[in-house]
Amino acid sequence: MTEIPEHLLKRSQARRGAAGDAAAPAAAATPAVPNAAAPAVAAPKAPAVPAGPPPAKPDIPVVAAYKARKKIPVWAMLTLSILPVWMFMYVLALKPVVAKATGPLGAGTKVYAGNCGSCHGAGGEGGVGYAFTGGSVTTTFPHIEDQLRWVKLGSAAYVAAGVQVAGDPNREGGAHVAGASGVMPAAASGLGLTDVEILAVVCHERFDLAGAAEDSEEFLAWCSPESEIYLALEAGTATFDNLHEQFEGVMAIGSVPLPGSGPTGA
Ligand code: HEC
Image (cartoon, helix red, strand yellow):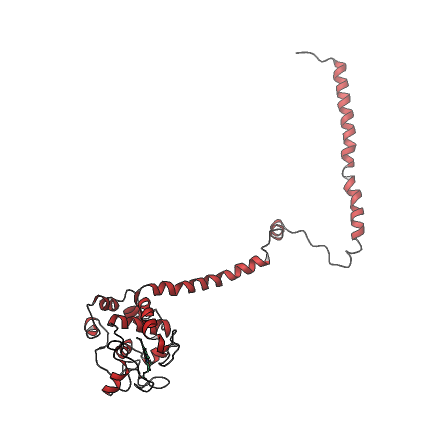
């Protein structure tokens, strides 16, 4: 180890001490700067302060962070708020396409356009024949069986058989009397439609045009894509003459005019 001579050590210590002394006043002076600046800054503000409320307390960090957050612009909020409405409309627009692609409603829409729309209106709004919209046709025929029989046989057969009312005799708004509003062709003998086509078009009239509820027993039994009655008619294992023998709770349809029934079956 090299010995550092005494005088050198002393000089070094002296120098360090001088530097420290020089730094000390500088450090001491530092706080004086804001102190000196403070009154200068505060001075111009001073006249405004006395009029207003005392200065607000500084926000706690959470609040400060909340205030400083990036805010969502108004146009984005508007766009976002419209989104649910848009989705609702989108689903509504899709629904009929999906529902009508298959099953009785899909087939019935086509049968209707080709055979019935010319007299009853393309959208069931009425024309030469009655309107179906607004629940009108389900008011005439509370039971789908009565409507199937009527459509299959047509008005002339009812008039000839002396059966005046094919639907509800106590219909709200007055019973529809056969032959009173013109001639309704027989879908079977006149238009050449099969039983399964007649069921399909009647499903379309009741559920698409008249707007009957699709969560009803009637819909499940007769008009849903899984309807066993529809599938049996389609497969030819049942006809309007024997449906009531094969399926429970089905009223006889048959091939001759019969008086219609009210909501309770009377
Ligand atoms: C040539 C015109 C014409 C065509 C085509 C026609 N209809 Fe009609 N429809 C009528 C007339 C007219 C009446 C009223 C008959 C009466 O007063 O006896 C009627 C009545 C009805 C009713 C009774 C409605 C109620 O509320 O009383 C139903 C249901 C019906 N038609 C279904 C059909 C179906 C289903 C088809 C297609 C397969 C069809 N019609 C095709 C003219 C027509």
